[in-house]
Image (cartoon, rainbow, N blue to C red; front, side, top):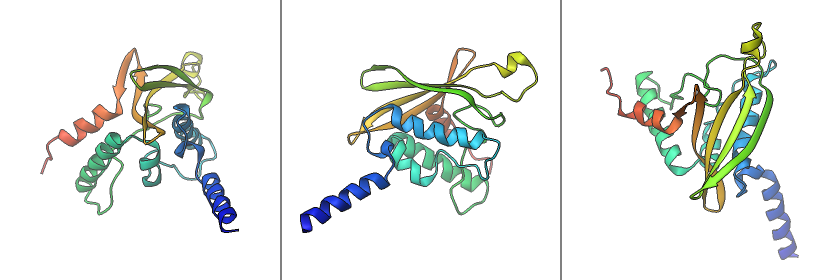
Length: 183
């Protein structure tokens, strides 16, 4: 009976945690981040949810990215004279923009793997509410570097692609941390 209860509890716990928390599938953590991003840009969003919320950090992201994010958050907190960590980004790192419209035509796919790093690509239309047809039909592309840590897939870096250039979230965090305080 005790063994059956243990299996029941273990099964219940595994259902209570999102699949991306347990999965070696490199697309799983990206899908969870994109679901949050889609919700954030929807017309009926009540409250913006950070893709770097404390609960998500250790579950969806690689240890190195988490350490950099926490360090940059602490530095931002000092700049804003806050006792709590502050999100160091003033824009959405997935869309690469502080503004936008409800995301449409979202596609997430594994683009390839090399040396233990999976390239998961998310494409979407961000400017669907704009009047200009060319702007409205622009396709935005974000790349997620996904690696395996402790048997699960985690995001190591996020790159927003604009005009053929890749902006690295990790490099941006390093730059923020390295900047001298103006005090």
